[in-house]
Length: 304
Image (cartoon, rainbow, N blue to C red; front, top):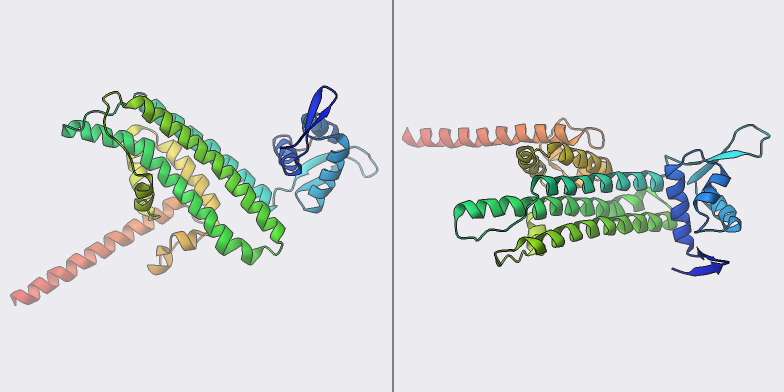
């Protein structure tokens, strides 16, 4: 990051950083004046550069300028809420907030993460529950989120967006924000486990193996929802899945092809995950019953 001293202050000259900070300010202060914006980012961008960046943002359909009266020099600044960069930025920000809430809630329901000696079944069960919440549940969410964005970047955006510059901006935005989420979880996970091993238990999780095990199957959502209900944190889990389902709306067909395979009455990108889970469960039960019936018919045939 490049800094320039201006009197007693330093201005940041990284244009990408300046743009992001202006967008963040407008996101939190819709309808503000140019003066409000200038004061809000005074330690980041000069007045001269602010004018230039605002015009660029307007040209890129990221910012719209609305005059209070037709001939007035005063105007209000808004983000173009329909722009894909703004939409995505909002979605990731909402996800990050819910993810932090989930981690905080996990800490609240399991305040003491002490791994017990793996000598008794009771100890193993308690360790499993703690590791499940601190390791596998957040890992499942992070892996699922990253797959959503990889699919968007590879299979969706190149088909609907003509400008490579916009695709580059989307990729930059996404993976910069995801890196913050991963860092939040890494700190949460390592700090907790480093304080938990008071019995010097040899617990060395293989994160790569854990990530490989956690598939996209919708039944994983059902499994984690069940254990979250038992711990009283179902609301936080459901909130975060709601945010994920907004993000994955255009890649659900890749992540969850069962609706097509089994002809479920589910509409990709419009129906929510609760409906998908309900329909999929019904189909699984139906398939199991059919399999049992066929086996029973086969046995009856043999008896005859």
